[in-house]
Image 1 (cartoon, protein in one colour):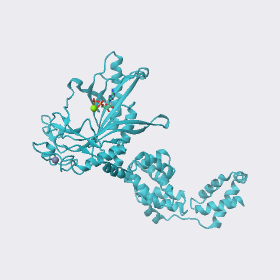
Image 2: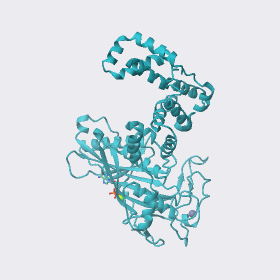
Image 3: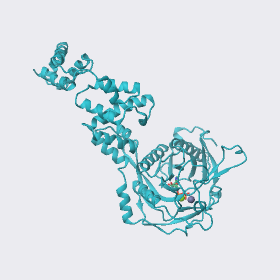
Length: 491
Ligand code: ADP
Ligand code: ZN
Ligand code: MG
């Protein structure tokens, strides 16, 4: 039943409850339990062996790098890491799972009791609990289209079998589709910063199932949840949740009951469809994996992993806001990726005044890139170019107006700042008597401001600096100009 438009009054009677299950592929060189290459996009069925296919007699050996990455992710998500966790077999039949079971973790997962902070109303933050993070392996892929006989055949690519995954399960703490979107955005950012995954949703290295129920506001018990699968972008997850919340409210308002089921999101139609009900749900018959010993994460291993944990996005933003005197939004821009933030900070450190580098990057470069629809990586101006501009400005060798003009040329011609500066070498007026003449003219033209200045409104010095700068077509040496303006006004 498609959700009809429900009145805001009716929607307002209910509270959604959302919990997310996120699967993340780890960026290890080899697979979780064998030496096969772990890489996306290879010729089908070329990275496979008896272990990842589960041929009789083959024995899994745990990849230490996968444990290291899973541990890093656990720590970055504020989880407690279990010293002794247990692998389990999750049994089910599916064509892309030749083994007939997936190696996973069940009642003793690697990590539990974590949380992520998301922005909440009024500048506050809200903690979303992370129930668990466990290790498991991926299955292969059924290829339903792209072949001449796809109408009648399904092909199998088993390269993905045995790819190391972590599954991150949230508590049912999320209350709105927007909050779900924020949670996922933060989660992805944290995982990218730790470097354990590329989180590429198009390639399936990050996948999310959304669980959602509704209850009357004030009710204590959760409603019956529905699991929505097959959603391949954060925007679609938000849309699927919005749809599903309305659908469930409509069912209840019409006197019905929400069925516990798994539904699929159809992006083209913007709605969910029932895939299987509770009665058809799998019984996985979990049991401890007999071929793998318990996974022991020693206190030393944990301490080592802790040392390798990078400064995480939230902490980095807080530090950079203080260090470079940034607005929150600007800090967000500068920390959009760890790689970019690293490049910015490495460059800023070499400048005479690091704060100027942040300023110029945000005001002169980011704005122009945005207007042109370009990414940071496509910028004609390098970090070194921005540092050069910052230093020239700091030393008063160019005025801010001249700098703007130079950046205009950089973006028009697609050239770096140093090339444009060396060629154009903007003229500077450094002759004190010529500058003084311009100041005299400005003073004569604005007697009222002179009076106010002399009565104590010292900030008006900036007004005269601006007047003279304009009169000199931006060429007056800024340091000299500042000095002479004050001297004249005081004199
Ligand atoms: P299952 O046994 O069906 O796998 P779990 O209790 O393990 O269910 O929860 C799976 C996910 O569903 C978790 O992210 C959890 O937060 C969420 N969840 C559990 N109950 C509800 C509910 N009533 N409404 C919405 N989400 C829920
Ligand atoms: Zn293999
Ligand atoms: Mg569960």
